[in-house]
Image (cartoon, rainbow, N blue to C red; front, side, top):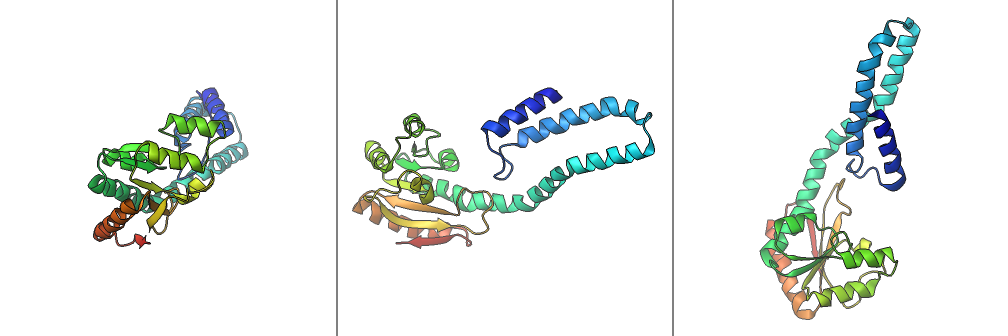
Length: 230
């Protein structure tokens, strides 16, 4: 079990990510605690009776040092969890409710799709590529660009985009033809990818409709969410 843990942890550190509210490596923490604890309970009683007091003290100190990062992680997790749930409620959850209320059944361009697709039955156009095979292939071939954002919106006859504008900048930025209508900004962000999401329309009629809907939804937004309408 310990060998598996070391191997998986090594592979993860080489090919995957850590951090971002502990989400990526959480499974490793569980496997590590289980495997190390199993070793301790299996071999420690036999070793403990054969070593001196000083070696026992050194072993005890070593265990404390090794596990101290987990204590810090746990304290930080407890401290940030209530903020993280508030972040998701104020940004992702509100995006889902907004789309469910006004764009049900329509095509919507997104680059953070989870809550919206869970709450609303929409045609999700994932411009980040997690749920769009074409976009994933374009990114893999390093051929993804601003023109693809514009093409996808037309191809799916989308009326709305809700995106992290900074994410689109990785691939050339927002198309000039898109109309920036508004944005939501949350406070004390610890878990969302960005503290601002931006709403875009693709023509004048769509822009006027979206602007009116943002004003209409304003009364439903949590009070800490700052809405800007252009």
